[in-house]
Amino acid sequence: MWPTLTCFTVLCLLGAGFLEAEVTQTPRHLVQGKGLDVEMYCVPEKGHIFVFWYQQILAKELKFLISFQNDQVLDDKEMPKKRFSADCLSNSPCSLKIQATEPQDSAMYFCASSDCTVRNIG
Image 1 (cartoon, one colour):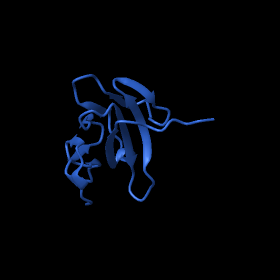
Image 2 (cartoon, helix red, strand yellow; image 1 turned 180 degrees about the vertical axis):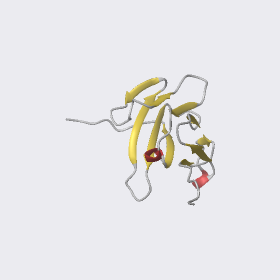
Image 3 (spheres, one colour; image 1 turned 90 degrees about the vertical axis):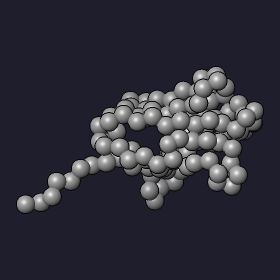
Image 4 (cartoon, one colour; image 1 turned 45 degrees about the horizontal axis):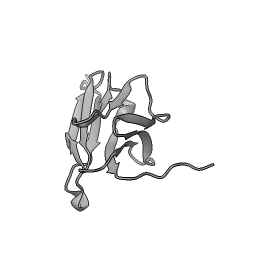
C-alpha cells in the first residue's frame, strides 16, 4: 500500500531585514494545503507610493504580477485574475490573495516599494 500524498502549496515570502530593507512582508513562510485560500501582506517603506508584487516559481524567472500607485492599480496585465487578487488601501498593508491554491502556485512571492517608477515610453 502506497502512502497517501497530500499536495501542498509552498509560498515563501521575502521578509524584512534583507539588505536593511524597510518593506515588511508577512507571513515570512507559508505552507498551505491545496484548495485553500491564502493572503499575504506588505507594508511599503514609509513615503513610498508605488508597490509591486512579483512571483518566482522555482528555477524560473521573476514574474511581475501587479503594481499600485497609492491605492490605484497601475498595471495588472500579468496577474492571473481568476484566483489572484490584490489591493493596496490607504493606511493599511497591501495584500495579495490567492483563492483555492493549486500546485502551480508554489513559488516565492515578493513585494517591493518605491518612491518613483519608470514608465514605458513609446
